[in-house]
Length: 228
Image (cartoon, rainbow, N blue to C red):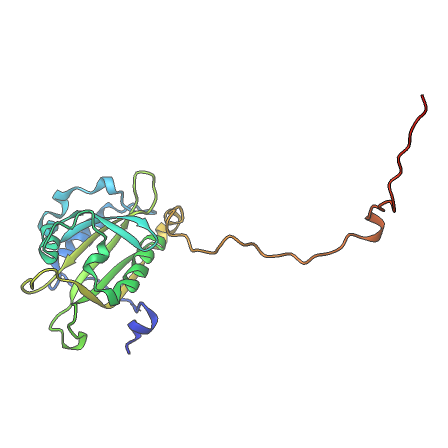
């Protein structure tokens, strides 16, 4: 059993995306970086399709709708071809094979809650990772909405070779995480991805009141009548 299966996510670091192998992902990340303010994240409203024209078929935008859950708001034609239908409005996890969905959910939490850039190496569903000729690439980049909350994701899914019969789903072979430290304060306001800690508070030990502070209760009640 691989480390990925045991731990859920394998976090490695690499210098940058390979522009030769995954040019669409490299273009999307470069565009996102050009929009990113010094101490924050790009705004969803700043995205101009003309800025990633050569990668539009592979690009998509997600909206967080819960912890580790995001739906596709906009998607290029390549995603529709992979799934064999219009994917807009569907959860992005529909493109992920069931064995990898828990891992993918944690990836989404990391993208929005840290926030972080996540790069996923994917293999077609049912194909052994060791036997895969090449890995597909998914890139996830956090963005803020009109309220300044980190609830949007600019993404890119780039596959190599011919598209197989749809629906095509993928398993996660590896995850690479790049933390965005300068944007950590922006991400804390996200309402959906705060850690679940429950409603209970630490219970204090019971301490009886000091003897001197206790109010003595009467042994009985006495009714006093006054004569008219």
